[in-house]
Image (cartoon, rainbow, N blue to C red; front, side):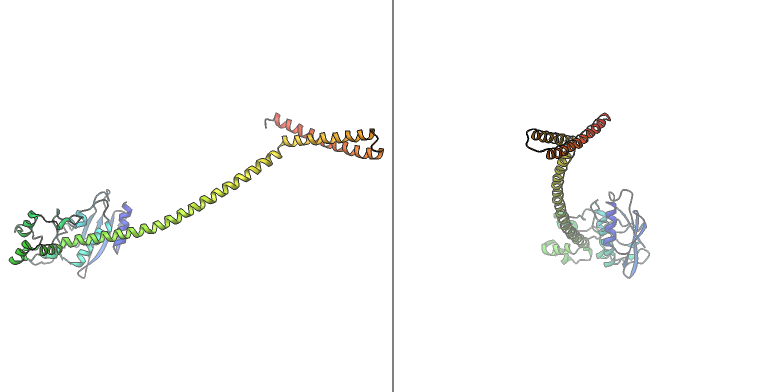
Length: 316
């Protein structure tokens, strides 16, 4: 998950410099024609703990700690969870500084409070957009800001008529709330989340096609495997039959049958001669040939029997 978070930093931001692998990165932004740098420090427990963002030079902005330059009040930092995208958090901070360039801390500033830099109270900045759900108590707080606290809603610059209209006109109040900077930040964040969801949907669809292709390939390989299995089974049966046909015991039995056949044939020739059914020349030729065949087959049989007995004694 740490690597995925670092990848989102490189995807959503340009000019990402690696200061220390997996621990420290630097991103440059344009701020009113001047370049600023945001140093991203990733602790050992990141992404279980929020990252630390330090802007240099230090800016005069409600999100930034004026003493240390640490970005503390950005919506992405305040609402950070393990499911947040580091790249989107840094991108949102950079866009804020680019759209509304703040002054540097060492530069003079006017006494007027810039309305577009107003940061939301921590309890108002929520991801689900509930900042627009104002009850009676919140409305009183909205219309009666304390002079001892920062004017978060810019009410001090409104006329009495405008304040009365906010108190009585629901549509005007809703429009006023919608234009508040931190509400716009929430809308921007929602747009970014929607864009991220669409991007994930596209990636998932692409992966779905890839999965379908691989599934089809696996099915084809499974069918091929089944066919090869059937072929192997057929060939194995043929092999078993051939092995039985050419086994020593089977050959021995065939030789015994052949010897018996040759012996019977020579006996038949002798019986025919004794019965006067063949002359001397024919008898001698057939009898000698049959006895010769008998002798050869008998010799092969005896030789095979000796070999089998030798193998048996050798425990084969």
